[in-house]
Figure (cartoon, rainbow, N blue to C red):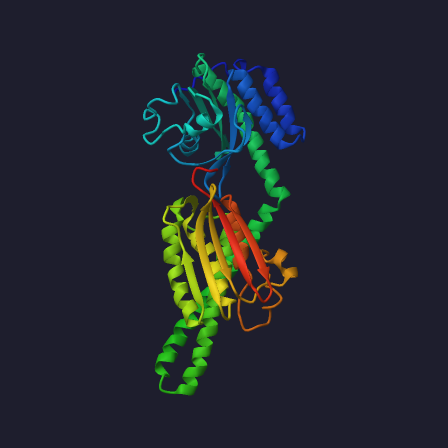
Length: 415
């Protein structure tokens, strides 16, 4: 739609804008400011629902932070071309939809309206407006309003929404700054960046030394003594490279970067494939590794490489710290969650160490200084990537008896 912004200031009552601005600069809780912004939108446009979304960069989603209307819980939706708010964020375009249930291809070829929210709330959406909230050329969120009344939104309504959205974008910008300062996210990211650079510098000479060592092993295979020493050195090099990879993964996760492509994953075939190498590793140690998978599909929105990281860390730890007995992997559905459970009969974790196991560089007291090497960073990365996508991670363990990790992922469409 064409934006006719002449006489903008008279379209929205000055008192409404001044009140919203005063709230922004007065130190009032930012959630309350955004909630008031949604109230101004609903009141000014005579709308039945108004929602302010903010951008979650690390998962490429929009999450509702203020809602006026009949929605009882938070909404999270991917930034993509298939949903109205997702398309608004992706295209950075403001638009009016006069009939949400009608043909939306005139706006975006892949657009469709999700009727599940209407069904859940016994509502019938007709008119929808979406405006991107942008500050300093950065997309910070989307403001959406809708109704089912006979009085439709028009061009003037869209202009009004754009005016209010400017102030909301300022509020979202300040919310972002406040969040980063309050939680020290900036410092955490800087530390992660430094760690990544440092480890990259370390990885190159180690990888180069490993290549030279492989050549020496080949030329010295006729001398058992030299070959034996070089084999031990090579094994320690492999351990060091594995540690370097662990730290690199953690630094990338802490910087808020996706590890791979984010999308809707069917966890069943991925789990089956990723478990295969560990079956052989367990067998070589005399362990029984069993894998139980459902016949149904279990779809969740997740980072593809991130899920592989979660599974490989839990499985490799289970095999590594189980001297005898078994490792059991189970994937199943529990309500609106996909559940991954990895259980072993290994050395377990001392009770006093369990609360610290997801801290970076922490290792349980019963493995420190032992022959089993590790960095203590794997579980920290697992925790961060699971939490990022709305999942839950639980740990139960008894020293000398074994350990059980349970990961719950929201099934696609349950958020």
